[in-house]
Image (cartoon, rainbow, N blue to C red; front, side, top):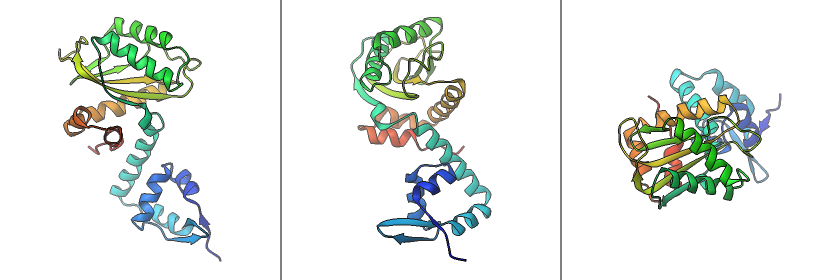
Length: 221
């Protein structure tokens, strides 16, 4: 029987990861491949055999890559804003609300500012270690065009009524459509900031690519 070869996109869909991950696996010679015209194709039998013989470590790594790819759907490099000037917590919320409008994630920056401030006035969204997880009190799928997360870092840390009393200069603004997206993202970010090396990168990285890399390399522990 002739071998069947499938595209990188088809392989990514089958494994539920990004095409970038598949390209990395091709570079590591995980699958048998061949060139068809100018395109690399994956031997489907080779792929299926690899899936059938995954060891515990490989299964864990594949699951981890799926989690990361899922988070990347919300956290894109253009959603990262570094070293803006802010005088207080409300100024930080205003700046990120305006960034969301500039990205066309919402139509009305003022509306977003008001719903995030309303949530903030109930109880602080600061979670310690200089980080706040900004979000509206209620989900607003009709108001938010694309489920997204913004990352912001201010030059000066500002008081945010944090549980550890530390000022905040790392902000995540969660603009999501449903509880499943929200809880997944909260859990993912919480794991990230528990890692001191990742948190240090958030504080010191000088460009968006370095921040995005830190956001999408989830520690295994």
